[in-house]
Image (cartoon, rainbow, N blue to C red):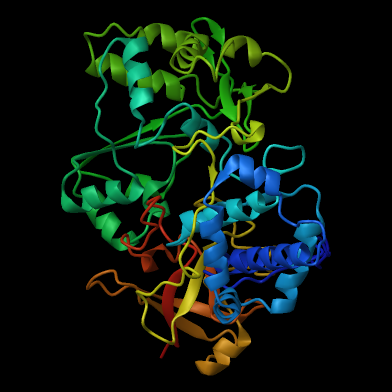
Length: 497
């Protein structure tokens, strides 16, 4: 990395076409199933973990039928991988005694993001790679506490059990209807059904799809509030009234009435630990996020049995209430976070316990190879939006990208040289991209990008975000998870005049 050269870090590097993950996963599973059936016919040892499948899973026969129906022509065309490489991957998988499958956020940011993850789980289940050492599925989160937020119930779709526990512990009946995911939130702002936006951290405007439309809609709101550690572009796209509430960062020392405070975070491995700041805050006037939320609650709920002052002064009391709402998951919460390294949360699949309607791990079938039938332009390429080396989420620290050898600018689109030749695009020529999704009558274009030859599969291109967020319609998302399809946007690329 220091010399900007490359070092081999993998025994296999599979350049899956953008949008081809389901096809690639099905290809591996198809080979595993075929190897198992061949071994059984010849009297050899089974390849599948039959005891695990029999005792712990549901839907195996349906998955096998789907894999048999899936053609190799479709798998190879959509995945972009040669069959020989898929066969090598399948052999590696079948020979491994235990497998951990890691995936990043990109796997979820497709129209079929949910199916991508489901098929990854299917692959692991075929050989019993859940509930034993060195095996399992590992989502690599983009932020230190994404996992923890969900665990303590921060979701727009709370369960009846969670709502019941909140009512029991705090003595009020919370709203029973579900809230809004990001896509629904943005649509409500566009439609005028929302009047106030409060952002606790984040850079909302720069992170969401349909940049131009969202900016115009945000400016129609009555009030926007940003609770942030740093200024960002969302603060200059605001409602008729706007507040910016600077807050302590997690690295800052947080002193409250009862002394120095620590928050808790959960990582991708379900480890929960305390996090206490070490840096002197830049101002004595900065409040913590907890203090700001408690202050808002005191001002808006003057008659309340909830002791907001106490929660602000002592975060241990908040953890006591988390334990009360989740008594099994967070038993002895405050004591366990004081153990060096924290503690590991209960994880059902790790113990081969399945909290599902069937009481088992469910093989879930994805029909076909997850091609998107709504894009009819044969010249379209699949755009994956990416981050650079000098970038954290939406925050850009510099114009260099050491990962890809790009220096001094971000207006670049990475293309396969055959795709460039087919469109009469010369290296470093300026191009325009136009979205060709079903996103209504709005024309979505982004121009002024330098076309750069890159080792990327045919039919796939990549460019940085948030510069390309305007190409992604709000309506183009995973229908199940409501995650925008930022890693698979069909676009037409043409030279600029």
